Picture (cartoon, rainbow over the protein chains, first blue to last red):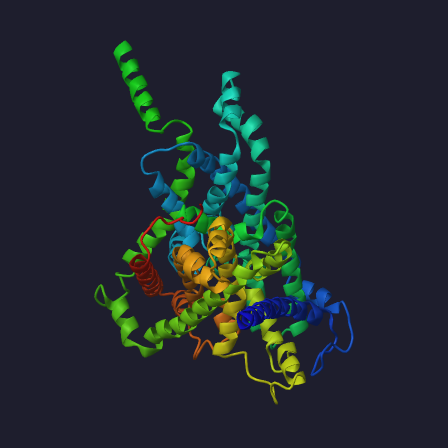
Length: 279
Length: 297
């Protein structure tokens, strides 16, 4: 009995030690990028010799970050707006109606989330090249909508289910048509959900490497793709300015995540697809 | 006239009774979108893969499986994806068992969701310096006297392996945590009242309840790891031991501009993933027979 208790304690300690080790590594991995971007010279020591801001200035110029950022947020903005416009009404109908073939439609929405982007990205890019859309901003927007539209539908469904359907019935009794119902009753009630879905679509699009990489041309690259290419120019560019760009990329992703986490639980970000699958 | 209108009315009525009305039609744009941009490209790629620039209809597949440089990519990718996924699941379960009792989970889960959010490109860029010969990890290991000289962790198999743990573990952990937190605590309490020790409670109560969910998690995590791309190029040896299949597909498309061949490789990738998922779900069916969302009380 005593032996068992000691073993239990040891096991618990081991598990926590691993968790702490993992979290420390994640933090260190992010910190090393940030520290390097501010460092002057960093060779063979724990920390750089001195600190400076000049890498940000040079990264901004060398990588034309103002253009890249503008493109990134134009693409992300369009993706967020379109996926909300297409996804929210579909989520409403999926949550409120039962119709034959509903599970098939559900599968249709789950597949783009379950199949990894690189697998469907290659044929998708091929089709977009065929229609002359690849290499343009609209091509990148379309490619990024493929996972975000179903994501919005699936994320919004439980938000719709939470709304008491008697509220809608009351609006109908007072003569609201579907359009008025949406605009005056549902959208205000769904606002937290729509905001969460939009923010997470934003994060997804800004950090989506594979689909953007496969469909973007030189003038439609987002920040994460530019970062990828810059790593291969490491011989030409200073490592610190690449890391300065990486820090700017992190900030442009994490801002939206921090805001989104006020509305959703982190487990929901990965958990949603699975839950609705087993349900 | 009256007949016709009552006819359409009754059709409308009959459709509404089956759940199809104006509201249901709101699904059409989204469903059409997915069909046009997900199902159609897949079908198009499938057909295109059987229409090579020259040779018979199976030429692309013959080319792939004749060339060791190409067909070995399947092995290189599996060699990364299977051990990583097994490891991630194996460490997720005990940690989730402990963390579920933690009251302030949100800080931990927020830190863990960071690598997923930042994406593989940034994780690879960070690990490139962190794991490098002068990086903090090698320095710390030398400081504690665990190694004499820096160990090589980048531009080889282990660099990619570690990056897949950094992005994959949070994913499997968060799924496992939400699964274990969803279990009815009364089941375990009952077992404890009857004298089951914590290891017995885990083996006899918790594990059987989460196995079906773990199988699905395993599939999702495997498919994710199997499609590893940027980190295999940035942190691995893309010409050698980490030449993964997604790299072969993107090279065929963007360096040789052979979309037919690239589509064939993408289809091979999808088939391998599908086979693996099928095997896992089949194995689950052998061990577990019961409702899927079991254990919710």
